[in-house]
Amino acid sequence: MTVLVALGANLLIAAAKAVAGLLAGSPALLSEAAHSVADSLNEVFLLVAVRRSKRPADDRHPFGYGKERYFWALLAAVGIFVMGGCFSVYQGVQALRADRQESFDGYVAGLAVLGVALLAEGASLVRALYQARGHGEATSDPALRTVIAEDATAVAGVLLAAAGIALHMATGQVAWEAGASIGIGILLVCVAYRLAREARDRLIGEAVDTELRDRIGDFLASQSEIDEVAALLTMRLGLDSVLVAARVDLVPGLDSEEVELVCVRLKRRISAEWPEADHVFLDITEAPGGEEERPSSSASSASSARTGPATGSPGHEKPM
Image 1 (spheres, rainbow, N blue to C red):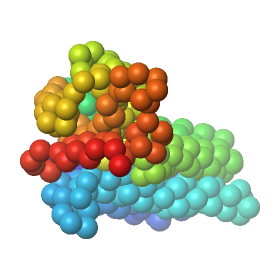
Image 2: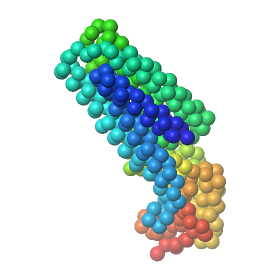
Image 3: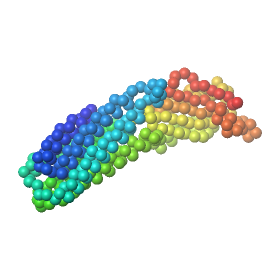
Image 4: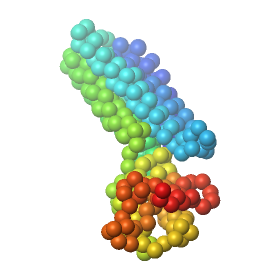
């Protein structure tokens, strides 16, 4: 709903800014029109991301489609950079090179359009911030983060454009308006870079936050059957999906059936305590009874039991 509200507002504002900018010949208004067009296209990307990321896992994508959100968020960042940032800087540079004295006939209407845009963008920003505040976990949603970044940038861009136009009208110097257009472009480039960096981190595989990882590690270490947690790896697969892979050494004396039961219990406890951890894999090694019985590293790796998202009991292999 937040994305739909932002899309509707951006489409109306883009049309109004474009008409006013063409009539007045204002580079700041044209930059803002390009900004709104880029935002509108990005909202479409985000709607596609929300829909496609909810598809269930299949044979080709056994971990689901959660990372679709990050792919489309990356495309949205590219759209902000190219359609918004680069075009705005271009408009500002062209205005400085031309250095012509425009008629101010359409500028009053342009300022009125910016006033309406400020109200619409501000309302969309307030709604997005309200949703993020009401659902703390929603701040990890790239779609919501992108909407917040776009709306905040849009509010700042409208203020810059209005200031540039007002100073241009007051002084007759187009440099003020050109500077505002370039400032809008630089602002959009910075926002696009930050959104793209976040999407890139999630796409290439980002671990969960340190607090969640430590809590899972403490839970495993506190189990009486576990002698040591040798390794714990995590990766976000989507908005509500996390992969957990751990290698743990068990205490001596457990037979294969007991190891199997421990695997099932630990996997179920982790998924129950942290529902987002829907893919849990455990590499189990039974700790040796004495130093002379300690297997080689290759043998330890062969003695493993894994639990995954599939139903049923995990398998167990004895050392070769």
